[in-house]
Amino acid sequence: MLKSAVKIGLYIGKRFRWITYSYLIVVFIVSFSSPYFLMESLVASSVQTFSPLSPPYHNYAVIQYFSMAGFLFALMVLVSAISMANDLRSSALFHLSQPMSRTDVAISWMILTSWAPSVLCVLSIVIPLMCYLPHLPSGILRNFLLLLSQMLVISSIVLMASATRRSWLVLAVCLLLMFFLPFLLATAISIFAPTRYVSDAASIAMAVLYPLMASTTPYNTTLSPTAGAQAAVVLAAVIQGLYLAYFKFRFEVI
Amino acid sequence: MEAIYVEGLTKKFGRTYAVRDATFYVKRGSVTALLGPNGAGKTTTIKVLLGLLRPNSGRVRVLGMDPWTEGVEVRRSVGVLHERPVYPRGFRVRDLLRYVAKLRDLGTESVDRALSLTGLKEYGNTKVSALSRGYLQRLGLAVAIMGDPEVLLLDEPTANLDPAARMEILDLISLLSKELDVTVLVSSHIIPELERICDHAILISRGRVVEQGSLQELAERHGGAVVLEVKVGEPRGLASELISMEGVIGVEIVDGGLLVKLGSHRMKDIEEELVSRGLPVRFRTSSLQDIYTKVVVNAQVSS
Image (cartoon, rainbow over all chains, first blue to last red; front, side, top):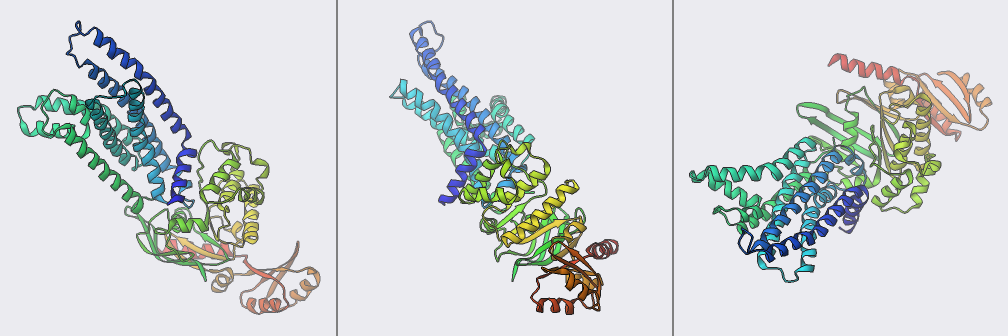
């Protein structure tokens, strides 16, 4: 177990140094943009009499901030996932010719593509924000959890796509999940609102795949964002379990 | 005792059979050639032996372990040089070997040993991407011998090398097999060069094992001539004695001994005679190419 952990650490640290650097750059950007959004929020609060928005404009700024973090998260996942697909086609031969198990390689990539981007992104928002606002409102804390579950489920699906070793598929899945699908689902919810069946299916998908986004939509969702987030965590766990099982029992180095 | 034992191995990619019902073994301490034309299933076989590919059916044992389910243990005792080795980018030679040493739980002394055994000591600080093909193969061998493996799997170690580099690599393999006392399975489709280093051969064609055995057995079975390598301090006297013996076709004095060409019918007697005098002997066949042509080409024609 310890030997496996050492190998996973070596694999991640040595082989993928540049990915780690890209994470650090993203964390740096996200962390240092916090004051900007907080200042924006404070300015907005001070001039709220002129603002067309209602008093909780503060939350709006945070949501905006979350969107930027989400975009950076998408970039991190995309970079790692394409690296993974390329690596499984090429230098996996080198690593799996050493006394390293397929599961070690799978866990390394799971950390790089799913856990690290999700947790780093959320922490890079939470830590600087708490420096300015030690007592975060519970609504914002809830949003962090929704964001984390959203990132975990999306990165897990991308991870599964990377296991196919096809970079184009990874890119297509990333673009679909991170840019197009949210809009397609929102459109489906609004267009098919009279047809309950389609609208309900789209809103459930929205709540499970994008719990944070579902919490900001003006529609009454069939599944609450919190329940959606719980389902997202379960779905992410199932996908990652299947991914590990695939590596343990089926993955071959061709 | 076999280092590698394969029974009824079948490996398919989609509907295409890469290896079909292959049964063979590799004796401990031997240098065995896995011979076959391109696409015969040599690389697939080596990947199955290393646990990189899952067999569709059959029983595979490397040092008594199943490579698919006990891959980590198998790879700890097996070193491999792939046909097209891929190395992680951005490494220098010494750093790459240090990385491998860490993956294999070895100390840094193993890095220096691998560098000196493969003649890469002066290239320790060279970037892997700057190495020539010949030196990349040396690096591959250095990676393969890290941690004193019991078995070396070498997949086309001389592919794409110029003749001088090929000879260098073959000499290095021969040296390593003696120095490290390992079992070597080396695949190639270039027969004459393998005759120099191997003592057993497995002939494979279209995924099927069509012939196998020691070079002596193969020569006996297919009527080929055998060359006996004899190490002797004073070769001239023995040469004149041997040339008069029945069954000896020719004798050549080489550095450190003799090469005795024998007809297949008397080889056992002559071998016993030499062994009884305490002389170290090793069989080579001068007609492995003929045997290969006869067996593999016939197999291809008949199928």
